[in-house]
Image (cartoon, rainbow, N blue to C red):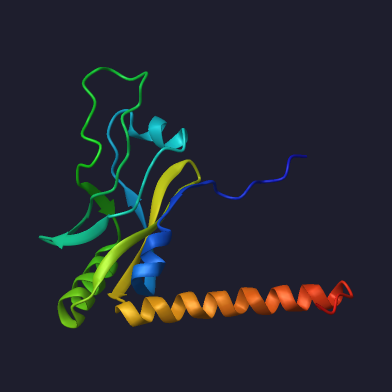
Length: 159
């Protein structure tokens, strides 16, 4: 019997974790057209620079790059067009309330397939200041140095 594999991740927005403090997250479906699904299955997408907007009680994702599929018809859709996200009404209302009250933004974090359907994880984000970014880098470097020291001692080195 074949083991069920984890859902394949198409793209991650690692820059979002660097530029923002990420909060609550939601999973949303994406309305795609034509050959965009085949381009995603080929693993070609970029979430960098993408953001989510609530307009007229509908949620739209802007700035996400899904390139044109080469074997598709010559009239392909725009690669950075806005795409509608599918969420429950209560989730949309909550997102709209959080964004308008707190002045935060919504960013796409992960793009993946789940049960054969393209999904995107979106998260509530608050911008980091420059010193926050430097602090996060310093913490990560200190953690790496501690791991190196533990590894060195486990191997019996006294350097």
